[in-house]
Picture (tube, rainbow, N blue to C red):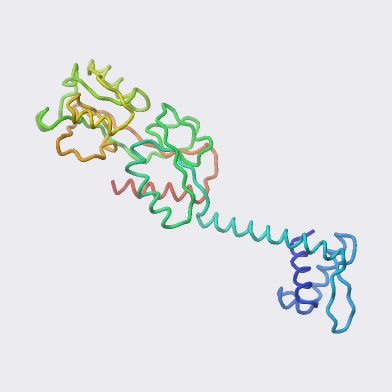
Amino acid sequence: MDLRHLATLDAVATEGTFGRAADRLGYTQSAVSQQVAALEKAVGGAVFDRPGGPKPVRLTPLGEVVLAHGRELLARAAATEDAVERFKAGEGRVDIGTFQSVTNVILPAVVRRLLAEHPADVRLFEEETDQPSADGLDLVFFDGRVRDADQIKILDDPYVLVSRRGQFPQGPVPLHALHGTPMVAQPPICDQARVERVYADAGVAPLIVFRTADNRGVISMVRAGMGVAVMPKLALDLPSDDLSTHDLDPALTPREIYLAWQANRTLSPLAQRVIELTQQVVKSL
């Protein structure tokens, strides 16, 4: 059965005549008759009794069955069409994998703008992992390339030395000055592992006195005098009146932050909008 035939059945049953149904649908009366005939052929029997003259047509028992189920199908089709249009307009759900720095600095502005534009269902999943997977997520942020995924680089995030104010002279601090220096650090995963390989290649061995995945924990322990820290600038989201930051000489290669999604997957309009808003927010940092 064609949905158009069911819509015609509904119109005739509601209006009572083929002529009024034709006016409602914008068809000719002969077109309405042809569609009703096609429907009757499909269901194997008459759906209307036609008394002739000015009297309205009446549904047959078969017609009543077809109309009852047909209206359900028409309602579902209308709901599907509405859902597709809302999806194209940017509504729906988007699942995003993230990590601390992005959660604290980039995503608040992205989510705020997104929700101002669309009644979207935004789900965030934060995990500190050495190699994330885009499976089951629409998008995932990571400080490095994601294997087996399509991705774009959104930011180069430079590293700085964080210390208590006055611990080092103003200006860049030589990298070799970190040799044997007490240091608070992130766990040796993600880009932190690369940074520590740079230390080793330069013959520099800081004294790691505490590791934590919590950026606030790192800063708190530096403020307490436990040691210095080498952190990407995006992670420094706390007031630092009693702290100072220094460039390193030679400078560490910045960590690269990527936004990735499943390889060869067509992104939803909502996910595409998240990418656009992320790029706008990053430009303003």
